[in-house]
Length: 440
Image 1: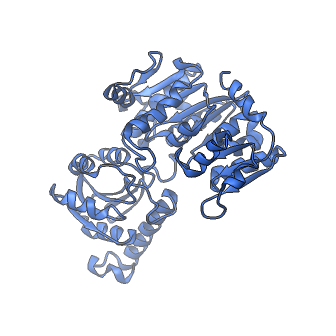
Image 2: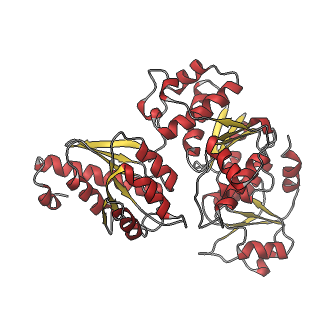
Image 3: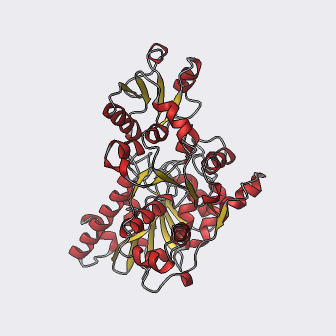
């Protein structure tokens, strides 16, 4: 395969290895190298600083995806002529015989990765899901998954940008919209990081892109490989009657289109695919109903960390929602977001560092918007405001790091607050909402 030529050069480098980043990817890289009998040391800005004197002792460097290419430590490595690889490069250097399907996109990549993992296991195909979905490829290679025939690798733009020897056998690029401008210097740079993955595919005819990807490429004046396949989202009419209702949302219809098309290329009939899809459960904290309290339905979409995902979630509902959103900015333009979002909102209860800005811009568009210091206050106010059978949607649209360690902690906190509220309402038999604080 095309990638072998590059990975051989990495695996052949002797000597100790420096790993930049003491997170999940960094620790996985160290674990793999130790398993191969290599010396591997972790460096992190909070614990152990990488210096020029350190650099001279290492044969190559593995960088975690969170390190920007212009980071001072990477510049130091370049100045010392030390090769720098990504954690993905490292993992693949010990798994050359595997088939790798890279899955990327601004939204949907986790869901699509897990769908493909689910259906292939149901069909007794030898596969594993790795990457940004939670298990670094180095972790998989260090374990039994090295024997797997297919790796479905959820690939972030950070991983694509920083990898030197990642040449997947197929690429599924779901969509593109503005995101991660705290890391990438522009939308174009973000797009080019994704495009690098597609252009590096060993078989360009196995690259599938969403219609939004094609449209953005045209907007930027970028010519795509004519062998790339443009995939259109399915419609509800394309689904068999026994498909779970959550598959009928706009994001899932897009994900299913890619999954069905990939399965077709493997000789899996559409009916066989949907039979294998039975029993699939969406990824935790992707759009799903938590519970209903006296006619008010609470929905959790904490995995929404950008504008496109929050907007897609709002569009799923037939009526305007009570929106709980906000969080840490990644440099996106909120004016356009609020302009697109407000027709789908009944009201907005906002948290995080972007709350004040969002409230002001939504209020100008006639949306009742209030700001809260914590998520608990927003949940309680949303319930108090609700009249009749309405939907309260927690789809933040921003990163979680200003208030939570990640979107998982944020989603768990939301669901815990909702269930606490439900318990309080059951105890009080829906006492007047102004008195609810006493029980909640």
